[in-house]
Image (cartoon, rainbow, N blue to C red; front, top):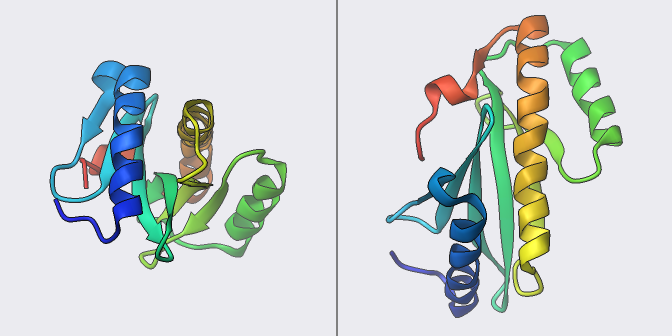
Length: 149
């Protein structure tokens, strides 16, 4: 795997053992890209390490809530209002209009407790909201269609 910056490489190497220790058999590692995966309940949390300028890095925990959802104004309003209630992270829509929940940390200053809180917050949010969103607005649970990306 190639890294874009030394900082990206260093942070990736720093957090890999943390994630392995925290999540054990639920931890996965991609060999072709700077991403890890963690199964939490009905969520598969992608943990990505990406450059942020020349000397910093972000660590983003993202899990998809529902795929193939028809977008409705009342659903968008619901997601925005729920964002106001969340402590860590927020809902979003990707270019395919799939719903995700994510949280981002600064990589260079991240410690093990911050990383754990981020990954767990994302996984627990998806586990909490996926059934509710799908039962109201349709779509497919992301966990049924996803594998490690």
